[in-house]
Image (cartoon, rainbow, N blue to C red):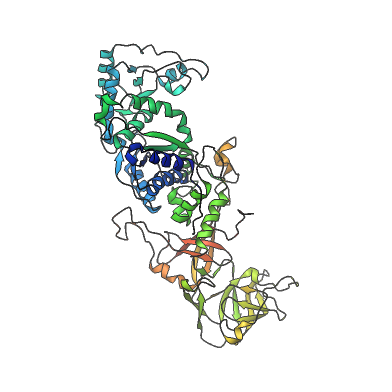
Length: 582
């Protein structure tokens, strides 16, 4: 899809200003730091496009760093899916790092904090600590352990790491300011004990794990990050980010970084992505998956990257969507219709058109005498570059039940007895002559005659009709399963509604239909069950993309991985109707 020219966003303006001023010797380095505790969703993609996009635009590097500081929730499964999703989006990281790479350095820094009287071990419960924090207008209350001797703090912290202290019994807190108006400065927790779960990389080596606020800025510093870009909820954390960096930067600590005493990363924040008719909470998504309310993390109704991929969204359409919504300092709600608009714009120029019949009724052409023939149809009318396909034509066809009325008024232009001419897509003109019905009055067969001199593309095929209908030939048609996906929630902003969010699910978010499609899609059955594993792919940078089609008058569809050699499964990416611009 052709990209629109746009002005610089405010993050790009900051980066360009830093380059003009010669900061960091003109070096641009960003990072994308996901926690490997779940699947990436479209909200993460906004950050991915920013972090990797800045590096791409300004000849810098973006590293992928897994924030693996909570072994109770993290797993290598999530590491692998995150890598695969980023690669599918078309981004390339410089290096892969883990917060766990710095556990020893962070632990040593914590020891130094204790020795300098800037940290202490607290034995209170989490509830007691929270109660003592105070309010934004009232100072907090100091912990009774705040002034314990340095030697005792060192001994207890070592005991925490040695596994001698039970999980939840002690934490290490920074000793800053219990009266600071910024609540994050009121002696934040630096380390907690986690012994119940081994770490996915370090096993049982560590029993204490750093908190995000202590680990993140230091990890940025160790790696040489110049622009630490994150979402707005971290804006209030920025002063603490800077405070911790203040303790390890400057002339006295230049040895900690290869970039010299003047180097330090800068944090900047942008607005999060909120989209109508969905939720962005990992916790809520996990509930949907665990309770079987969706078919898994890659359910095409989910806002996860793997769900969007299975739904049929392309990397380019998602990246275009991010360009359109932009980056600001103001939170807002984005209409899901814009996301659907971008995929329509992407597919309308590339997805071959295919005839598919969703409510089939048999059509018999009574005066057709041949054994069948091949119709050559354009993949996209008017676009010769996308070539043609072969459609089998014969005496018996499937057509849409709604394309025939036994008794019709003058406003109905499709098939009806009485001499009205209708063109079969890319082929002949026919006239309905009658129909058969079953005992319940349902039409079972429609009869028609055709004009053999009216074939599309021939001299006699230029005759105009008021209607053109889709068809597939009965003997060559494929049975297929069409999964018609719609919005997951019935209300625009489920997160803002009171009560259980699960009660707001759209009962019609998935409708399954058995349909008839052109035999030209038989090649999809031959290529069934393609996946990273059975395609012999060895790198997460190689990700299989499934084929897209426009099923005429129905919408854009993608072949689903559930397709087998015996069964074609198609997922509707979006309908043809685009209300967004209206």
